[in-house]
Image (tube, rainbow, N blue to C red; front, side, top):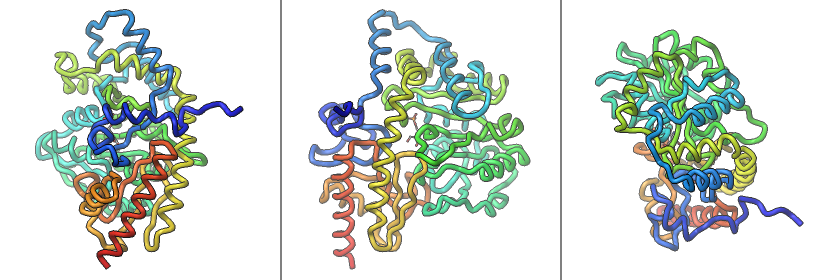
Length: 399
Ligand SMILES: Cc1ncc(COP(=O)(O)O)c(C=O)c1O
């Protein structure tokens, strides 16, 4: 008899998702809507995470943790980084942060003064722009062709001004789903070294990598690049811990670690990660990899389904993601206003998606739709059918 998988259709706890999954997801939509919006899994977390939480809770002590993070958490992060990312990382470099998003904001606050500039990809997750702007800075956009994932590197020198202080790197790229090559990483990293820029290197997606692909981590390229790179990680994507708000930053030097810790305000206790969240994240890193591996295999089969369905549509192109669980089909040829289209998909066709709008991903995202597939096959198939049927009908009605 086949063993039951963690990712069978029956494993999605719809009642709980409808109560607990916020941030554009199930708890925020009517009961007849299928949700393919914000990127976190619809499946319960790995059993080892639940057991670790239950054990910790049963002790009944919830005292303050250390500002930098629990020693076992920092140790687990350093060990996993060393084993999986191709460079030696020590626990002293790890700062626990209450989400990758918070880590990004601390890095921007540390490296940017009001009026300074940062170069970020376009399209890319809105958090890059939001972090830079929270620090009083401005973004300059490095175009990435969303249909091929290829960068317009020629533009890079044009974007540089005396105020440029930071280069944002998202690898793999949300929403394009592409992994950067060694050559691209060298080019970006060396550009930062030559121009004295810090690098905000977001690798939150780097453990969702599909077969035949190799992920290369930016700090592994050279010690000169590593010395300017703050790498951000989180547990929302691979391990489903978004609501526990936990992540970490790998700092390049002891001085950088010290400055980032001060900027984060963790030592004042004004910020900091719940110890419970760190316990969950530590269990994920120590015991969750078999589960994560199965998750990636499940996602890969859904990626193939999504790519196949979208590429059957006339005039629509879609890049098969090499990593991540987001699809980003291009509907430019259909000439539709995507914000309105998403609204109609939601209200009339009962499926929630994210428009490729500047406010989410930058102006380079226009004409696209972002569809997340971290759910069961059954839900994804039904959601996809609704998206494709809805879009086809909307197109007919506007022709
Ligand atoms: C590229 C990228 N960075 C950071 C985040 C934020 O992750 P967290 O939930 O840990 O704040 C996301 C979430 O969508 C993301 O896609």
